[in-house]
Image 1: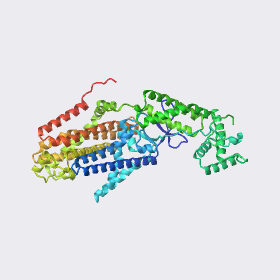
Image 2 (image 1 turned 45 degrees about the vertical axis):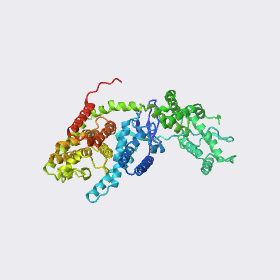
Image 3 (image 1 turned 30 degrees about the vertical axis):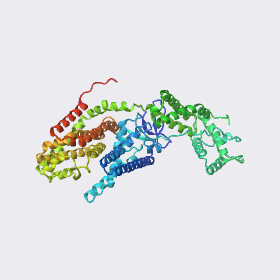
Image 4 (image 1 turned 180 degrees about the vertical axis):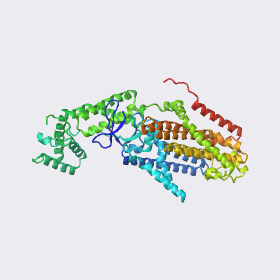
Length: 287
Length: 333
């Protein structure tokens, strides 16, 4: 029950992940762009909160006529520290195991060995962020000339290595993931979509040859086309299918009705063959 | 068409209500916490989860409805992490951390702790010697903003004032100083942990530079006959703080060591194991630094008697040593 790291054939970025019940969940690795966006959202939230706190603190300082400057400073320094270090830890320890940014991008953090995600793992991956992000950021703000300038340049180059590290491995692990034994997967909330075979339009009868024209791959493309509900695509797809299966009669109703009827019939045909143990991968699969 | 509805459609229609039930429960729990569900509902989830899993494997075998299969995969993934992510209550977790996890991991790092301590105090001795011989070394070891006037050019009287007088009001109040020092030290400690993976070297460097600073300070005060007083001034909080920084360095070493010598595990697995254990120590280190910040900001400025300062220092040392290294009674589980 761990992420075996072996890519599942035919699926992009999917990893075999077998539960104790013996079912493979086929987890998908969170891709780099989604993670970058998630991080930017989180940074924006942190900066927003800091700005709000600064305004509050400034307001308090003004209202107290500079008497409580010290308290104000304490509040600000501590708030900045806790936000910077515990924002990620707090959210990743919640049942969703994701910061608001990750939630928005449909990502979550898991332990690579499939066990539960523990507080120490989350803390380790957050502490490493110090090195991967905040240190380069402080290099960016550092100004120096002469030897200092060269040091800054070296520092920047060194940290760029960390920034592109996730791009160099298959599981998009950043250094923190490596140290904590975690990884980030796609776990978007999906709604159950209606079954397209539920109500096929009546009035279409397909012969066996016409249903032999396609395999599972084309069926799935057809499913996407039907769910997308884009009229122009549907017309184009419908024309191609009719040409392919030699459908000469004019359509009694819309292209969509034709497509949904053909989808239901094709799925019925392919599924009944599936029950007999044959999965026809695509239209070239002639067996 | 052979039949009005496909088998896969009937399959789905029969089970759909259970899936939706599981989804609603998970939604509620993820939005708040496990306490948002009643005991009956919590018992229901594993049953529903296994049903959904079996639906998923059947659906993969008989259904070609892509939407259904991705839905079930998503649902099962969410439920899996709920069912197998064993949860303990927050306070239970906190108690366990202080009673078992933290001291155990600190004890486990004793070799690294020793190494970090030797590096830091060795550097301190070296700096003490160098600064005693030639006061110009002081500038090399202590950055200007930390020295804040305590440098070789200062008079004995002004140095004495920094040890006993309250800071001038306004610019650096006590509590502001405490919170600033706490966050500063915590950031240093986290950095020395995070740098450990680079084969221990940067961590060793941080430990050494910290030790150099310490030695230089004491040497400076000792040269004006204030060595005893300055040590008391430093150690009232320094015992806790230096112990915490040593532990942070030890945590960094533990990680770097595992990267270099992974043992029987693969390098990545060894790193993950060491990283999690070291992180447990690090959570404790942040807490220790918080205590040190309080001692530094309040106790040091409020207690002005040398012997009292030493008493606090020795007590805190004994407390930490006893807490970490005294054998603990076996706890029945």
